[in-house]
Image (cartoon, rainbow, N blue to C red; front, side, top):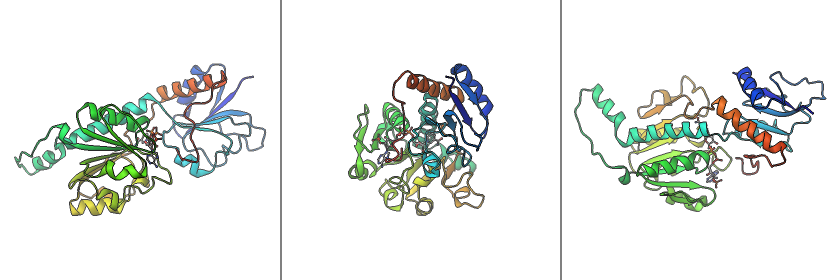
Length: 311
Ligand SMILES: NC(=O)c1ccc[n+]([C@@H]2O[C@H](COP(=O)([O-])OP(=O)(O)OC[C@H]3O[C@@H](n4cnc5c(N)ncnc54)[C@H](OP(=O)(O)O)[C@@H]3O)[C@@H](O)[C@H]2O)c1
């Protein structure tokens, strides 16, 4: 029987549907919302932020595929019935994008590029102490699909790299710590802190005054995870006191960042508009289609979210 896959995306739904149709020619790909009259026969949904009521209306749903790696919004919405697996986006394109963004920002701060730009605007010639990567302590919070790759490459560049995760990890050249007991050791004295955790009840507001105060003086925070990991006021206070040199932020509590938010004008804040690792339709569709094909051949779905852990 032909299975129906519904694409519920606010932008580019037709493009995604066309790519999915050529990757899964035996499936019926549709982009309209399910009828609320009952009897809907959708097997799979591909979603970002689905319209309220759409997922509960799909009575025979077998899986929900998120086009995002972060799925906290889907869990918090309560829209995915408990028996329906949520599959998060795990895709090479995402990992490559995040690696580029973190390496670009880390190297820029390691080599003082933003500081020299500030000095240039004052026509000031003032060489700073330049150290090699192995003398620079960097910590990556989260050592999964994205954080694990980032930590590996930071270590390959020579940075004295630590990584922190929930369970023990082995990453070549990286000092790996895990669990609540390993957090202090992971961050204390770090000069660059990269956050790539998922947003869960255990990680929300983790980057607060207490944790950020454990970094080296004049440390740089790089947040590519979620805005709600960070206590905004703590970042502002620590920038004002000089304990933090800079905060490079890609993600925010409210997006777009509200006009009046202090981050817009706070010296030391460098922001990008949630572009660190965009989902690339072509590689993402290939990942979803491969997962569906192997599921229909009898294998379990890959990358199913553990709702108790929250990621
Ligand atoms: N800015 C952007 O454009 C962008 C794009 C994509 C993703 N993201 C963000 O990046 C996040 C990470 O993505 P991912 O694909 O790397 O996720 P992932 O593969 O699930 O990895 C998550 C990592 O965080 C660790 N972790 C989770 N909860 C923890 C806790 N309570 N204590 C310590 N470590 C914990 C996990 O530990 P274990 O390894 O032990 O499980 C794992 O190493 C996403 O959730 C999303 O929020 C942002």
